[in-house]
Length: 383
Image 1 (tube, one colour):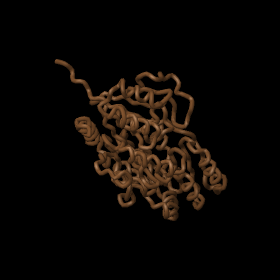
Image 2 (cartoon, one colour):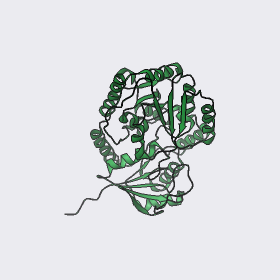
Image 3 (cartoon, helix red, strand yellow):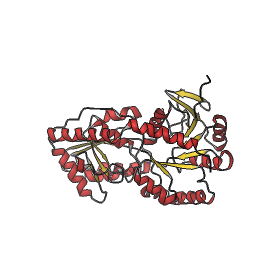
Image 4 (cartoon, one colour):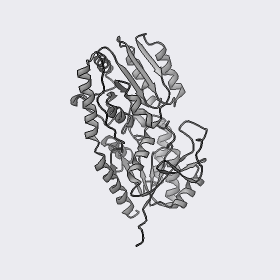
């Protein structure tokens, strides 16, 4: 009996393993492929260097399909239209998945697909169409959106959102109503609750260092804290000008606030490193999912985040805090409350955080939903 051929998925992304400076999108893609690998023939197409770097990866084969761990990947030394077209033609996918809306790779694939290949596309904007994200490089994005609509590039495109906030943003900006909403896939790990003594607090910030992640806001908060706080920062300095602004704030913080920049963490190091702290502080301007928030909650840290993420009403379920960015005093009160919190109360909250995230993310059901979604889209006729 002839073996049935698997349907093909070609996935384009700016950054992938062994890179780690691209943040959450790398985690999103690796977790998604881990789910789909059994059911589909998947090829990941990406750059041959890490985000923000120019030097290529060492010991990686470029410009040909290679195997990296459990993934089939083609690392392009030049990700121009000619090479992208060659990959699409030779792999001949049933569907193409784009891990961005505004990236140059996505723009090139959309253009080529519109006029040459006419394949089905799934686009995951990863929060790029939310209000706060659109304000960054606003003029450039407005021009792109104008031509996107003018050229009718939206034909044969399906959108993947990760929560209702992102779904509504896509509807509003693109006037599209058929959106597939599924949370990001997550690698789940189970830990015991953390322990903290009264009158101590170690806070961690893990993220790419750019304005949207709001590190400067977090540092300003610490200026008003009178207790002894340790605050460690992890993440690539993506925007050096912005980092210099943050450094100026660090330089004038009072002596009771000990701030250290610790460099970047590889994807597989993050959760274990988080276990060395008590709280995770990320007053972000917007997150469509926030893998690092999920990792912090899995690790048992108490999240102190903005209300611009899908993780809402945490205080009501005793699993952290999501606070409006206009309410700086509330952030300060929460940090001081955490510092004074005794072991029993803190450990109970840590236990609640772990229980909450494992209950919230049902990976068995989500895995089935993803497989069903791709099968459904592949089975539909082109419009």
